[in-house]
Length: 98
Image 1 (cartoon, rainbow, N blue to C red):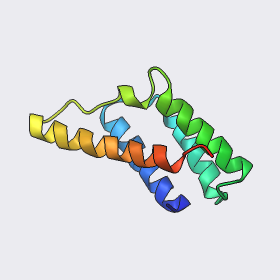
Image 2: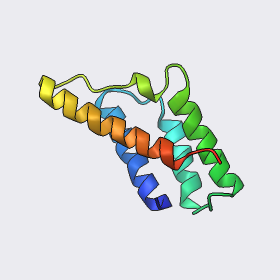
Image 3: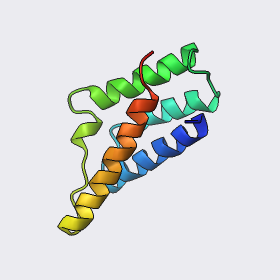
Image 4: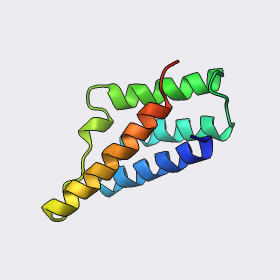
């Protein structure tokens, strides 16, 4: 997965969080986006920092997993939360610790 695709996923994640009135992770997501804009290689210090930041926000108590979509019909919520989970999983997999 390219750094630009990861950036797009992070921006989408932030937009989803904003739609649920959650701006708690903006500074961390923005910091990761800044690191990715330098186009780091997977074995670089910048990549390690981005990985650490994402994994900390996603895996900690009161992290990303506590945010979910709670609007619309049951079918809409199910679809929206499935998309949200897929984005989080793609990012988690991309920021796999080496």
